[in-house]
Length: 335
Ligand code: 2P0
Image (cartoon, rainbow, N blue to C red; front, side, top):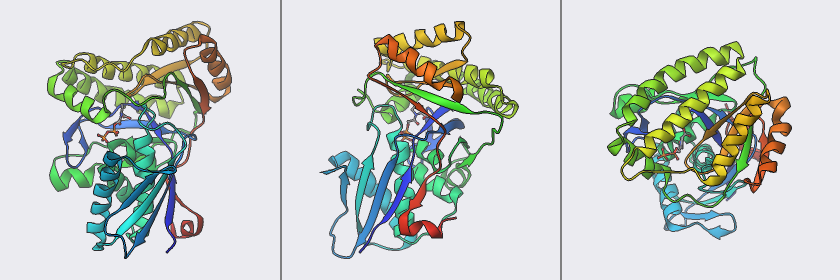
């Protein structure tokens, strides 16, 4: 039997998701807003089989590690339950970016899996429903269903009310032509998963609540800046929101610190670039890599500046990318 293949791209949050109000349904404490990138696609194929006694999951050319396979299988259980179909599946995933290094491989991964699995099991889902489904795999994956700027609504309430109201939707910003320059400081897997780190932050950091409150204002300000095409405003808000999120982690007990000396060197260079008149603003996620928002015309200059620091193993300029999509023969039935 032929499989159903989908592709999805990572997204980088400019207003961060950090903390859940419901661990099972992946309902976030705050709404977040991201930019989907045009690099580091995940390509996932789901092939249903009558004969398989259990799901078979591969990552690249290898059988997937047990924890990865268990997450994929748990996600497929949700799809099977909705579809009323108990058959198992083969899942083959190829990540073109580094896995587990704070570059949102779980976002592109679960967005691609949601689209491919919904297609394979015959679920007829619109984009909002796909974003809710992807959310169940990894919160940030809800945003990778769409391209460009995307907001993930926290939604209201818990249980079914929360599940129905927490989804992503696109945000228009026609006056901006941005790029995100990614400085890969270290592509190794992170010492603590973002899931564990955000739980510890919510449970123990005295700085968590103040960040939640300030993030709501950041989101309102971000919408104003995006609508006005105000790149400096967008960048300043994104940078303060990200540094604030990392401050909540530094306040956790024990502290969670994703910055490395290389990250700091890149952050210093961002300040120098601004002093030189370049609109460049940094954000960081659950890893040491630094992503810098700038105008697309400045992308190469910013990338060259980071390469000169010697702190980055690799630097690349990412333009905004598309939403998750079926590929090949399945693509024609897409909505
Ligand atoms: C974000 N991050 O908004 C934030 C900022 C990392 C730092 O979303 O537990 O892998 O699977 O819902 O989506 C990473 O968290 O967490 C993340 P789960 P996820 O991009």
